[in-house]
Image 1: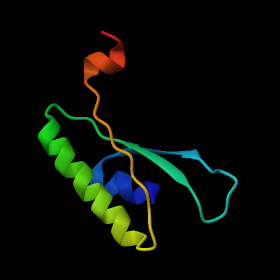
Image 2 (image 1 turned 135 degrees about the horizontal axis):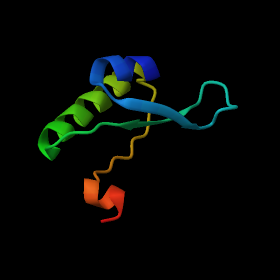
Image 3 (image 1 turned 60 degrees about the horizontal axis):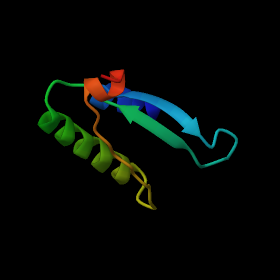
Image 4 (image 1 turned 45 degrees about the vertical axis):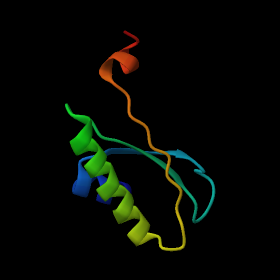
Length: 73
């Protein structure tokens, strides 16, 4: 899944939890861009793709941060 999200959406993806559990994973994906609207559409597409691959259920949490927020400005 990590490789698919990287290839299809250009997202940076890391497994951030549940490393020792079989058939369960927590992935964190990050996409960067200048404008929030195209990023929101890309995130929608990414979410739809993941949901189509795992019809039994997935959970998403999404957020948006500005460069100033990330850099502490």
